Image (cartoon, rainbow, N blue to C red; front, side, top):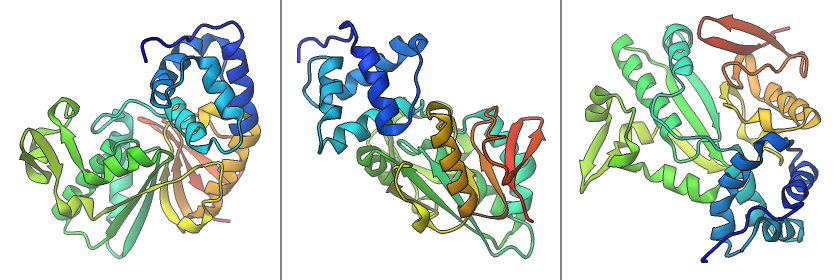
Length: 276
């Protein structure tokens, strides 16, 4: 398609209304340029010619693929290896000692919004490395989900172009990835720790079982207060006693839900499920 119109009068305001009505997502006027830029690939993917045409398609019944594409585009973040730094500092300083302590048999992690996989693979590599060094017996598994089936399928392959390897720690790259034909492939020992699947947070996901750690980085901030409160209640039911929720290293979730205690760490804040 030769050109896409993103600046039709009233189109962004119509988008705001649809996003709030369909998803409980609230976006301000100040984010218009950022949001429309994120949606341009979605408009092109579905062979539309304008933001208004995208909004019209979202309002049609049976447009779940377009709606999911919009939700994924808006809530996704840049993929990078071993980022954010604060999360991996927290992993080293606080989470790993408890995760790999003697006597613990298993530990389940849910990574929400995994996109193309760098975050769950980075976690798996760090955990695998620490487990070997500590001679730990804990079986750690990661459930990595995203609303985009395309992103999930790509992540599950575990194949990355050289251009997407920025930030990868060289010793771990050599140990846990193989280079073939200009691409880097995650080895099976790391892939076996992760289960990739699609998940829409606005639908029922209680069948995923219980977790010791839920990582939901910078996703909740897009949703309205009622939707946030509903999601936090659902997360609480899935976390085991003393389980941990990381919703973003600076993102407050209290007083939206009183099932959590805030824990302040030098690398940020997180929330621990109350044990009463």
